[in-house]
Image 1 (cartoon, rainbow, N blue to C red):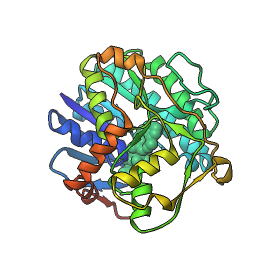
Image 2 (image 1 turned 180 degrees about the vertical axis):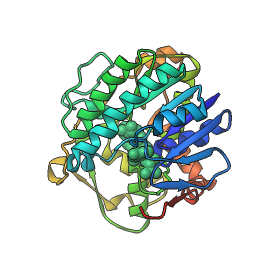
Image 3 (image 1 turned 120 degrees about the vertical axis):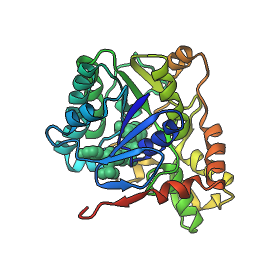
Image 4 (image 1 turned 60 degrees about the vertical axis):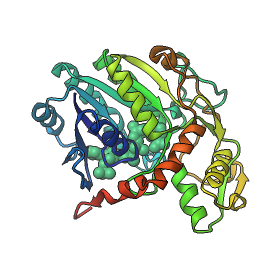
Length: 309
Ligand SMILES: NC(=O)c1ccc[n+]([C@@H]2O[C@H](COP(=O)([O-])OP(=O)(O)OC[C@H]3O[C@@H](n4cnc5c(N)ncnc54)[C@H](OP(=O)(O)O)[C@@H]3O)[C@@H](O)[C@H]2O)c1
């Protein structure tokens, strides 16, 4: 297959492009960053520029488009809601329509943050109640994408892993700080179900192969508080877990409101694929092995910032 991956310099897109490139022909799209790799082709473009999306689709003629580009920084979305709307709503809406016309298949990435996190254990049929600009834009995009392209896949995710910048995921936050002997806080009242990004990438490829469409949850089948997750990272990497203090999210001063209980149901996807989804604990084992075989360092060596950015 010819696969176009937007956001290929980001946490999800870079890992996904590398995973997919072992079986497929991958075209990664980046914006401010350039990537140096022979594993897949890379093009740098601002997807908000008029015509850039359409040109890419015309030139690449992909079979599958996996849209990972976004303003995924929750606090940055509060500071610039207009840019968040353009990137997180208008861009995927236009993409969904264009991909639909081209006959290719689209996988659009969404988030657990569409829920308010009051109740937890959310399924695809529960009604979201977004609490932040980021969450509102991501929910709106889910609806606009499926309106524009009913055959599209919209997948809500939460993830951890190694990133090209070395600081995009919560696992990296704990790993980097503890390695340097820095004390950090871990929220003991915020629950999530993150998947290792490379496990998530394999799920995306299976979902596209199975020709699934509509809304799906792709999360760890097990949950943890962010504090518990930090302790597990510390233990697996043999770092000092006592440097992590259990705190309440109410003690943090963050620009965007966070949803406390983002435990998620994954039965719909497990049934569609005929397999239980991986757990974050299994993912953490792989994260450790990836580090041991130099995968984290390899990812970091791929990236450079384009001049002027
Ligand atoms: N990270 C998480 O924990 C998490 C949790 C839930 C859902 N998600 C969702 O997963 C998806 C991927 O997130 P991520 O964490 O991988 O994001 P990320 O690391 O912040 O990467 C964002 C990507 O978007 C690209 N991009 C931004 N503006 C662009 C533009 N105007 N034109 C072209 N490309 C542009 C960036 O390119 P440059 O860097 O080259 O500028 C980068 O490759 C998003 O939809 C996000 O909402 C993420």
